[in-house]
Image 1 (cartoon, rainbow, N blue to C red):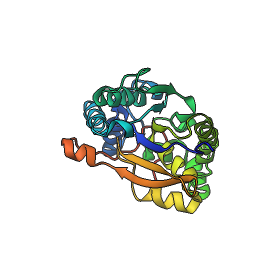
Image 2: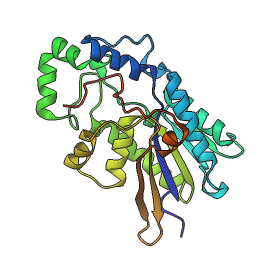
Image 3: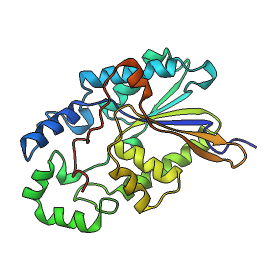
Length: 253
């Protein structure tokens, strides 16, 4: 009987991006709009994000050969692709020879529609009715015009997890994506409900380049949590740990 899930699954948020830095600056200054010149898909890593990605790559490279990733599934966004590339480079893993790299649009950032690039103040100022509606409905179900709710993200991730069980059962899989993706994957893999995942979300942002991982339980034939927001590779390398909001959309209530 074949394995029903990957043998090991790592889920990693991209390194700090220029958008993370711009959001912090806009929020601190009380601006309505975040000053980012790129489309969200094209926002690059910051210099610190590069450092974080390289530190995590060295950690993967220090794992025994039989415990390193065999498959990398990556968001198409520049900051995620760059993070994945740096991880593989530092780990000494060659695409095609050592790992199979697959860029998958289902791992893209949550789409924030008309709230894109607005700070909390900007949303309250420009769209007060939407801000009130979001507060009433809650972020799990609220869908801004032109954007997605968490449920929409979870729907596309259900398709992704089905593909993982079908094509990557028994393999070691690394997913490189975004903060909402990390939390929505946790919702699916740990069989959580709305209240549970939002309670986790309220504890704080997912640190950049943090690792959340799962191991296959052969007896139960399911994935069991192993690491949660693991940042030791960054600390050991002296790379500062950042836990910053992504650029688009409304921040936590």
